[in-house]
Length: 361
Image (cartoon, one colour):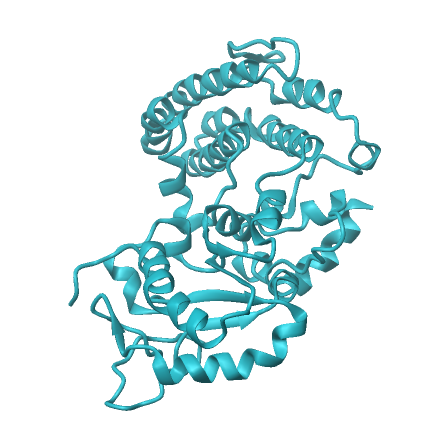
């Protein structure tokens, strides 16, 4: 096996050292953009040697204008005849998709046409397929709320290798949520905490430690999502959420505490560690200076003996700062689709996500 090279770096080198010179030689007047901003752990910067077993290798998203789309087959065939069979020890030849759509790197035979993954398309068709958005139009509040956060993160964390068609401008537009959408998402996550924070103790008091653990785990997830929001980072889907969280500024303080929540054997231990986590995120909220300073100490849940941060106080204060009428009139604090569900089959299906616009009307 060749020495492992992170896939994003491998693909950039492949473009700069091989693809770009070939294109400039054969199509000297062609204007194009190129990069890697789509699926894959390598686009997120989380790939390891294990990642090389599928959908991984020297590849490039290659964008041309609508008027030059007629050249797509010509460019594809030209590269198939002229690309080297390997780059930095990795094959440039991909097998056809198997029954579940996985494409693996395979060794090309001598003189064989390279089945490469320099994928040629227009910028508009890419974003229409990947996010179901029209790059010619501004996104509405509803549009933002049904976008897959995993896919938004790949666009932000991916890299543009070459840009003559304005790809960077679109990438910048999607860098993060507009301010009022961000405030709405923050308020929604605080509301989720408010709805379940006393249940860790209530379940425990009736000797339901399993139920208490499940709810505590849900609250840990809310806290981590709240941290992504407060640091203005898109959260990836579950496989990479912990890895991405570990790179947040707050992780050094919070990670040990959240781990103790998840390993506590009694609800009182759980509550103690959750209380510490709540107080940290409450201080983080105050540091944002988006509302007046709010209480950072836990207190009793009404007349019941459970310690909570009263997430509803944060949600109400944040919502008061929203100015956009379209965001102000959203019907409930349900948040985006990413806050509603972790179901990959939904969050990875743009057609189904589009149908969820009805939730925000």
